[in-house]
Length: 237
Image (tube, rainbow, N blue to C red; front, top):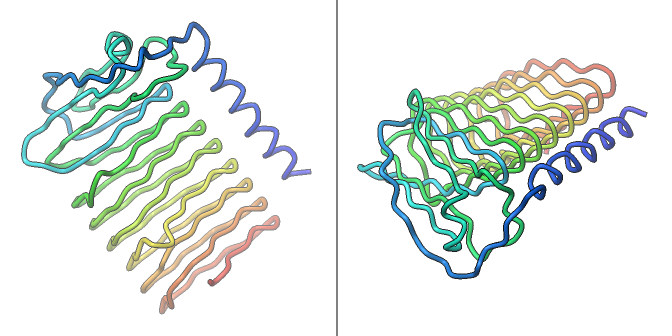
């Protein structure tokens, strides 16, 4: 019964996202162009409405929209309170290219909502980074970090590779945090409502799972603190 409810929730999320993305939508004309936008002074990125953002690290901040020419006017980028916001004012039904390329010297927040996608072009070296995904969004990053705080809800997915000294993650409502290739020294994980978390725990693992959720871990942590309830599982791979 619980799995049916979770599946129904995922279907509803997909239907809602579909109606948002395709209502009053526009189709690209197939002529791909690049437009550099003068946006500065941000260390956070928030992406929504099905947009695709590719992050790379460099000494100078840069935002380049690479998209079908007629889509430039519907792709919105702005900076507010240190956050680069990427969205669109109409749904994009079909396009040869629909990308925003972002270069940053440092970043401390990546947020993806409403079916959007965020990718890393290369390894991002960060001290502290917060990653949030919701509503069918996807985040895929390669990281070298001191501290990671990760949250995935409402059928979203986060894929992580690299290393971190501290790794804190929460997943629920059918979401997945796939970090089996992320080597973390200390891990604090919470999963519920059919969500799944994978991690490579090196020294310490604390995990709380409930309501059909799963935590899968690699490695041989010296200390473990496991709490399970309502069909939750913690499994060593």
